[in-house]
Amino acid sequence: MKKLVIFDLDGTLALSKSAIDAEMSTLLGKLLAVAQVAVISGGDWPQFEKQFLSNLAQGDQFDRLYLLPTCGTKFFSYDTGQWKPVYREDLSPEDRQRIIAALDAAFEESGFKPERIWGQRIEDRGSQITMSALGQEAPLDAKHAWDPDFKKRTILKGYLDKSLPDFSVRMGGATSIDVTRQGIDKAYGIHKLRDRLGIAIDEMIFAGDALFPGGNDYAAKEAGVDSIRVRDPEETKRVIETIVSCLGGAV
Image (cartoon, rainbow, N blue to C red; front, side, top):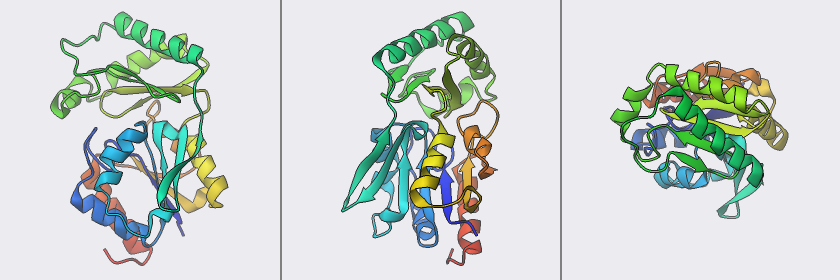
């Protein structure tokens, strides 16, 4: 029987940089009644608060919920009425500068520079550097049109794998690339969940939209977790309904 259900956020529980909707909030509440839940995403903690927590109905089940921002390089749990950090795997200042320079170079060499950028293109999240090709505030229609088949980011990742061989480079979201320390990815976060919660890998299930080689969800599959690739949040809702039903909950 599965005891822990793990989700990606962008593209899985919600559209890119958008809030979870009321139906998703309700379904997650039902899931928390029958299983423990974790969310691992490339977004940083402020994005989790804005996109996820502020739209999740607060109850007495937050002690069954675990949040791992920046692809598992940070871990938060709920304790005595507040969210507290368990760990964070920060990059050194020198590494952050090197990664940012490599991202800039890959963008220029690839020739994929867009005509317009909305907001910050490269964000230093301390434990992760994230490049959003169209900027952090780009509208959803522009994001979905820029790289729907991941071909552009596959080429960008190729540049980065050569220039940053000692780091993990993953594609995530609609236009983003995440860079972390080597070995610090969603698999790392899953192993931390295993050790902290005492839940075996085969008692977990993961759902995400980037479960393909090079995608930032693929590390979860590589960790041995039974994984479900979803197209969008609507498909995730049906997955949650099925899991709740299988675990004996009311859908």
